[in-house]
Image (cartoon, rainbow, N blue to C red; front, side):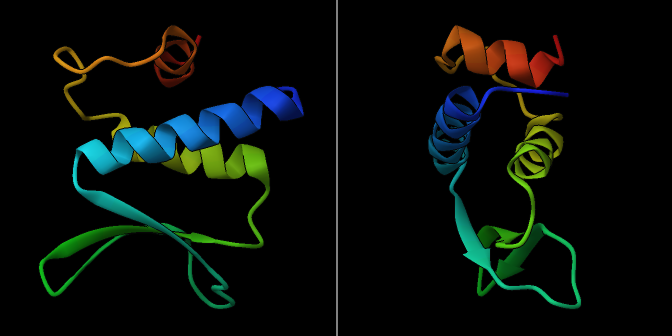
Length: 87
């Protein structure tokens, strides 16, 4: 997957907002010995992404997290919906 930098940054911001609609908080942390992923801490769900992860790989983490989500009743910008569908 190759996305130009401006579009990738736009997608990342939109995906962060989308996750917030599912009450998932996004955090960027240095994870020297762990992978990015979801975790629940004291009843709050977080997506923790390693700060050292490449931008395109960060987008893939978001795509995986949202892959099973029902987005039919949520407005999602067409570019974001296209990205999530893998087109």
